[in-house]
Image (cartoon, rainbow, N blue to C red):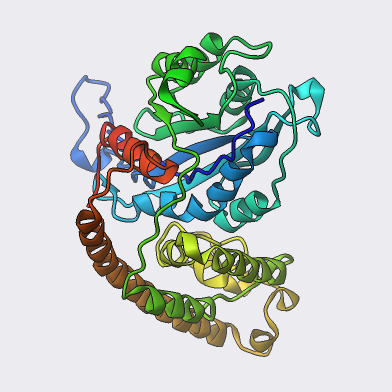
Length: 394
């Protein structure tokens, strides 16, 4: 087991899909084409990104876990300015851990932490709960689990990717990595490998070959290098707007209060990692359509086609709405939706200025940093791969 102090960043990052239906023309019995009115048009599905993150949580990977906590939001934010056929994608993230003795030997020391989900607060919660200890790292087995377990979109237009990170030989374990990665790419899932160490060791231990077999990218990380966070003049205002944004969330249903509390907990977790930039990046994520909570927030829920607030039971509403009429409830939700949209617009405008400032500062620094940190590597990889699916980035 490599005993290094692994410091790297992960985020997720993520993918996009647009299903464009091309209607066929019905034929009349006489063989003539039906008139245009008979042609049924189907709506294009929402653009989508699907990413699975497979983390080695053996004893030497504490730095990997620590940095993943802080950079999740930055990776998701890669897609804020992205579009495919005019649509902004939403992001689904799945999370697995592998390689520690406290997991089940019968499952090859692998655990699915979260299936593909849009609940980014839950992903953050689970990341902050992760612990490491010694174990055996079976890359082939965890790739196969992610390939077979997850509900990958069957569309060839969807960017679907696995990012697997670790530092032990890629070829360990009972499942041949060649078979696992070939199965993945056969389903349209790209496998990107991230070796926590030097490039030559990654090549010698199979990490590069694994990526090549699945149309992926082989990445190496300087795991002893901390992420460079550049403070910008817009940061304080973005964080302040995040507090205002939270006031627009209206918890409902059985888990509403619990999930709203979890939102605050994950805000605090980001604040605790402020030196890494997590608090700003989380606020930027929350200022975008990728931060979605229709399962507990009335504003997000009201945007769904089949949502009807009149069907909610009184006990499922927050106390301040229980005495309202149905029309008053609709007006209250609409008011919060308008306020949220205005705040999110301000956050995105500030973030655009922030990115210009940060880019200029990085250029001024012009430092030779050697190998990338993981956030830099993943963002570049995701952009390059998603462009092949028709994505454009600002």
